Amino acid sequence: KYTNLEVLWLDGNNIGKEGCRSIANLLQNNSSRLRLLRLDSNDIGDEEAEMLADSLKHNTTLTYLDLGGNKFKEKGLRAFLKLLNDIASIGNTYNSNHTLTHLDLPNNYSCSKCVAMEKHIRSS
Image (tube, rainbow, N blue to C red):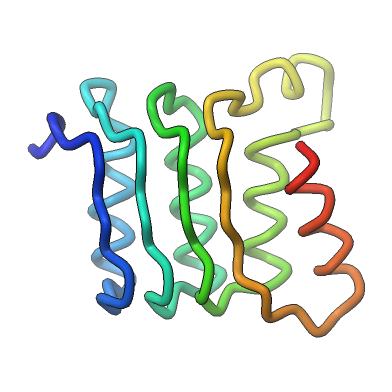
């Protein structure tokens, strides 16, 4: 369903866990043509961020993802770091997502570890 969408702009829509689940299902669909997804300011927490990151493991179409203005912290950041640069093994690094070239993240980190992870994600 909706696999012909190429751009989806849902900034400020408070999509919640069910909305994230629906988007994750779309991103996992091999027929999906979605290349730009804006989810700025949707109150997305760590659990939803993990769900979205997991859905992008094998996605080869999404190049732009905006998650700015959301509320996820270290756990959500870790999911995206693993998605873009999984250093658990050479094979995992090779199989990391290399399609996503633009990722906007929330700027609400109070811990130095989160700030360091964000910098590492941006450099991946």
